[in-house]
Length: 92
Image (cartoon, rainbow, N blue to C red):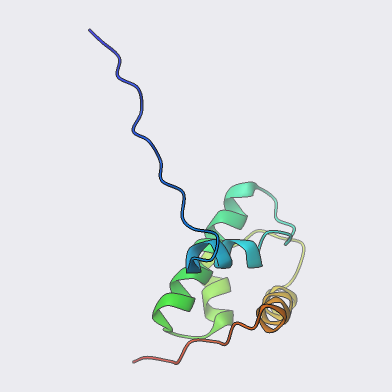
């Protein structure tokens, strides 16, 4: 039996929407790294699809943090403003 090496991973460009989403939540304190990864993923989906509100995306991530949902929302909103990212247009 032969073991093959894993497939190569192509990293996303630094200016891609997914990299931006994960960078926005990079410094939010969470219990585990996967909590931050889920938050970044839910933020990326929200930025891409525009369904619901930012607060709903944060709640859906189920992030375990000592910060409240409102504090996390405030931090992400502030960072979006600093980076010149406008919220997505809501879709039905």
